[in-house]
Image 1: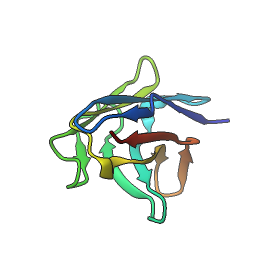
Image 2: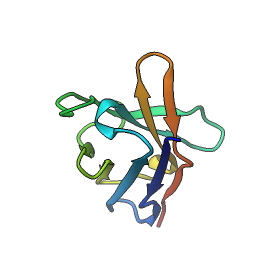
Image 3: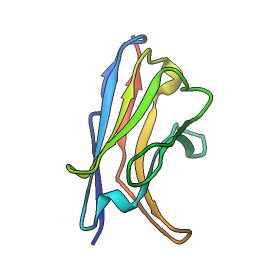
Image 4: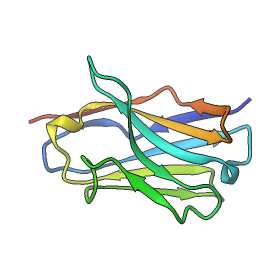
Length: 118
C-alpha cells in the first residue's frame, strides 16, 4: 500500500531554517500532485505548498509562507521536500505530507512537528 513518511522536523529558533522531507513508497511517485499541510493546536489543517505532478513545474504557496518556503520534488528518489527559511513562531505546527491522484485518491503521512521558539 502507499505510505508517506515525513522527517526533518524539530526545534529551531526564530529566523532559522529547516528542511522537511517526505518519502512515498508503494506507488509511482511522479504521478502524484504533492502538498504540504500544517496544523497548529486549535487550528484547522491548512495548505502550505503545492507542487504539480511529473516535472513539478507548477508550485503554489500560502500567502503566509511565500518567499520563505520552497517546495520541491525528486521523482527518482520518490521524495518531496519543503525548505523553510526565516522561520517564525507562527510557523509552529505539525506538518503533513499529502499525495493526490485525481479527485478521489489521496494519502497522508503521519506528520512531523516543527517548533519555532527561542
